[in-house]
Image (cartoon, rainbow, N blue to C red):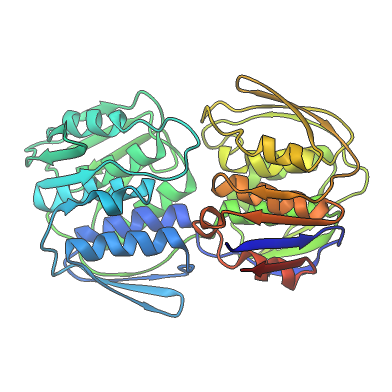
Amino acid sequence: MESLVIKGGSSLKGQVKVSGAKNAILPIMAASLLSAGEVVLSGVPDLEDIKVMSDALTILGARIKREADSLVFDGRYIQSCELPENISRKMRASNLVMGALLARFGFAKIAYSGGCAIGSRPVDLHLKGFNNLGYKVYEKGGFMVGEGKPRMGREILLDFPSVGATENLIMAASTIPGITIIRNAAREPEIIDLQNFLNRMGAKIRGAGLDLIRIEGVKQFGGINHVVIPDRIEAGTFMIAAAITRGDVFIENVANEHIQPLAAKLREIGVEIMPTSTGLRVIGSRCLRPTDFKTMPYPGFPTDMQPQTMALLSTIKGTSVVVETIFENRYMHVPELRRMGAEIKVEGRVAIIKGKDQLEGASVEASDLRAGAALILAGLFAGGETRITNLRHIDRGYENIHLKLKSIGADIQRKL
């Protein structure tokens, strides 16, 4: 079994580059199904989730090839609108192909998707939204089945600002004649990138980044070249790597406006952050202070940074409190951090952390993607050796994270 082996205690110094955003690339890949031309996506990291999405689109009939950090997509040969269970169960984002297939072909049959078991991510918001748009969508035998060609735009209200539902409904509405309005839409930067991508292909969408999105349906989409935005969660993970090792790291390829919720909290605890036109410099003080935070939909504190930030707070003397409002099972990293000596008490959705000036290396297991990142960060700080297994989760969202950390001074190796 492969593992990451970390010998902690090194202060990270140097420069590291952030890859393209996984959570932007996956919906954009799905949206490529709308085009009968050639689409080129640049800045695409080599991640397991992207390989799974490529397999899914290939099963549908798309032709995809990788050229360095680019993916070249040709959707002229789509032959199927059905995604089988063996692909869907590998990744939550596989359900994003439904909106694009409905918009282009008027039919889709998608098996229920998998992904990290961090809590309930109900698909009912997607199904309700599709039906409100005028499609006939229902559940049957473990599949989501949709069909129809709506004749006019409608106004829909999301019960919760779900990122996936917002993305799926934008795609599904993109070919419906007239004006569709989505209220209480999610506001994440990845949704803005999806809007920009679709508009460059010929869509007419306004409002991404706000809670009201307006879509005017169009008949066809052309091929384009598109550079994906930087990954704000990877950037945040490196920011905390600098802070937890009390290091000095310049992080290249960062959209500074995307990481403000995390940057504000890190500044509050005493981390020095200096933005530039090409990235930002992060300096971790040896006199950091505890803090409290609550995860919220964007532009609030991101749930995808909660485990990593908890690892940092475990190394800061004093009491910190974390409230997780997005996913009910997003504390699965806590027992593993406790193995390393962290003092954390969980009561429902509240975690109380009593920080310590020392953690100890241990054998731990990544239960999900961001939990794995948290364990890596704790291992960078801990004394002795930390061995992390179940790397498949980490590989879903971080491209060669061990090599990137090694380049800035971490003693980390990937071993069989």
